[in-house]
View 1 (cartoon, rainbow, N blue to C red):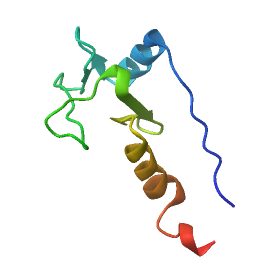
View 2 (cartoon, rainbow, N blue to C red; view 1 turned 90 degrees about the vertical axis):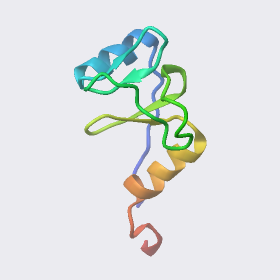
View 3 (spheres, rainbow, N blue to C red; view 1 turned 180 degrees about the horizontal axis):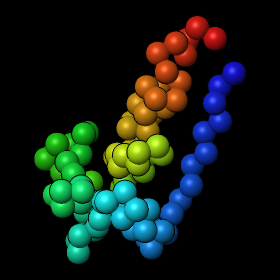
View 4 (cartoon, rainbow, N blue to C red; view 1 turned 90 degrees about the horizontal axis):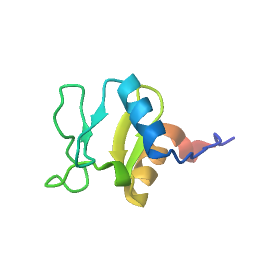
Length: 88
């Protein structure tokens, strides 16, 4: 049986609070900062950085990723469905 996936949209204050709880932050231009206080590069577009308006926060250890359909689909395939998803 497939796991249920629940998406929640956070407002800006909620997002900042959650990020700060995991030692991330948001700079004055809205870019997500790593615990070392550097901007986090996009995995899809390495010349760009994760921005609060286009980021998805993955539960667990809270990993910020691109909020694009491609990145979310990849996360679901790799992390939620797992390597044996086709065997059900």
